Amino acid sequence: MTSWAMALFQRDLRLSVRVGGSALVGVLFFLAVVTVIPFGVGPDLNLLARIGPAILWIGALLATLLGLDRLFQADRDDGTLDLMLMAGRPLELVVLIKCLAHWTATGLPLVVAAPVLGIFLNLDPVSMAAVTATLLVGTPALTLIGAIGASLTVSLRRGGLLLAVLGVPLAIPVLIFGVSSADAAIRDPVPFLTPFLILCALSLIAAVIGPIASATALRFASD
Amino acid sequence: MDLGPHAGFILASYGLCLMTALILIAWVRLDKAAQEKALNDLADRGIKRARPEDRSSEAS
Amino acid sequence: MAFWDYANPTRFLRFVQAVLPWLTGLCLLFFAVGLYMSFFVAPEDYQQGDTVRIMYIHVPAAWLCMMCYSVMTLSSIGTLVWKHPLADVSAKSAAPIGAAFTFMALVTGALWGKPMWGTYWVWDARLTSVLVLFIMYLGLMTLWRTMEDPIKAGKAAAVLTLVGALNLPIIKFSVDWWNTLHQPASVMRFDGPTIHPDILWPLLVMAVAFTLMFFVLHLMAMRNEILRRRVRALRMRAASAAQPAPAGAAQPAE
Image 1 (spheres, each protein chain N blue to C red):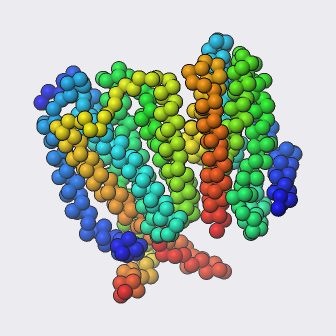
Image 2 (cartoon, chains in turn blue, orange, purple):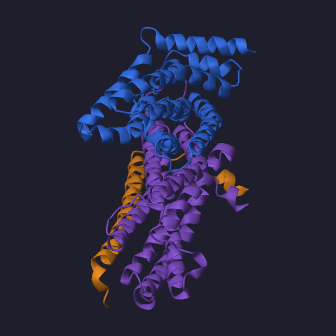
């Protein structure tokens, strides 16, 4: 049963990594956002260390949401989406696999890049590890929430910004618990595990709601 | 009636709420006028609804 | 059942025509009584002075922006589950009204906060949740506006409304959590049962008045939306008649 899932996963991964794909643009955008913040708030290293986790999280949020607009649109343009709809496989699962492939191509590089960018922001090793861990757990939730927006705007020619507007309110809980568990690792008002486990729970909730809602939206968009 | 030292804030909030409500009412009224005008224009050009009063369901 | 009877737009329009004058009159009556009570009958608070009078519009507006989202959620279930033809009309016309009430709640909250807290805006849990709700209303309205076909837009908006309804409790919980983390002392609180009847009565009357205003505006906006769809259907029929397409583009009337 897993063969078609693997095939779909590999196809999506290859498409986004090869020429014409946009896997690395997300990381570049992330780098650009993080670079631009010190110009805005000033090069004060103490301040940067304090707000560093928040900067990294907001950068990851924007990079994920803005990179999602082609998630279903490319497949819709060349007709692959219709084939997927007619293939008789559960569409929810298809969406989940596509999100997983997209996250592997664009979300995982963000997680890998986070410690490097943490150096620019004067993060100490503990908080660097904490931010990386929270991003690893939290970015899948961002991708899955953004997938809802991507499927709602799939028929629009320029849905990119609208996708971000629709996704941001839904992503606020992830941002809150991601940043506060990273903060909790440094200055412990609460134990690290409390917000971290809630963040894990949010990702799991998103893994249920996201595929169901976007599969529903994709079915409606096609007929 | 004396509203105390913060009368400005009280009046401003009531005023802004009134303004928002008036904008809503104006939007609804103008929208209705625009749609009815469009329907009338279409009717003048001879384009009417096929079943203006929907008799099939009236009978039931 | 009445619910299904009014699936017919023409019949619904007739119902609106009959009900609207009474509802409007009742709404004006409640507003007159409520405003009189909140300005002349209700006492001033011993701590907040006359500023407490802002509460009589702030709390009903805040209550209405929640109720409006509930109406939209129910309508979205109506769209997706029962395919009720008026459900997406109801959801679409409720969104701008809900946004307006949310705006009222935010503005009065800020104007109440300035004399009480010394600043127009605090990132208080309740205010922040309402701000998020405001953004969600605006996002829904934008989604409605960007899609050409009202049926498709209705379904997409219904999915988003339901996802938002599932997420609102999570957002509320996380904002509360975030807020207690950053500022432990709550600036002010309402403990329901301790509200004095002198304050409670004007509040209730104003809440009823706001609710009636919502229904009046909602029915009027729904009527406009039905007319708009008629215009659209007629125009498309006229266009296809003028330029006969090979596959006769039969457009359903509503």
